Length: 167
Image (cartoon, rainbow, N blue to C red; front, top):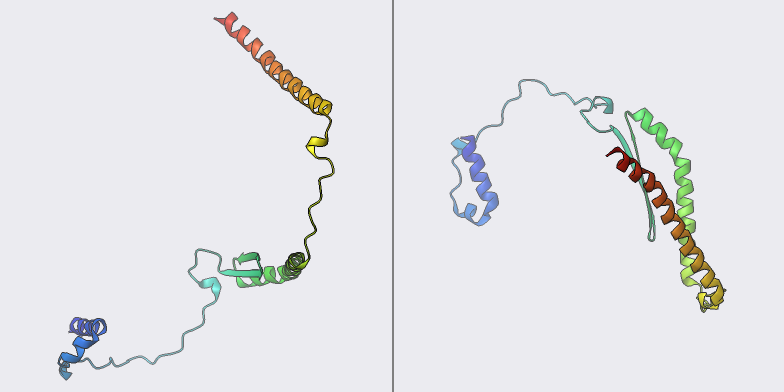
């Protein structure tokens, strides 16, 4: 009988126009509310230490957002006392970070508002270096590469000779 009532109520929720055309259910099919045999008492508040939680029972997440800058910090602990101690110890650092982000944001806003000076020529462009200096740098790089390759060959040579003598 309960299944029929649930089905009828579900149909009413899905199609309200059909429920207006359907005849009302007979009064005999409605169930009276169950009589309570035990007096109800208010539920006891549960402490976080007894909760069935598989992660840290205490968690605090703080987020600072100033313009495009955003910083998030999460503190987790095994109980309320430890979490509150960590949070209170972190608050001065959090304030310092908020102030630093505020200063960075103010600098960026000031830089956006300041006029942009025309770009200046670099102090020593590559074209200004004398050709002889470039040649000397290239020659030095080639010599270093050749010396490194020769050192690798020298290390491999005794291993080859040992392999040939043992065979």
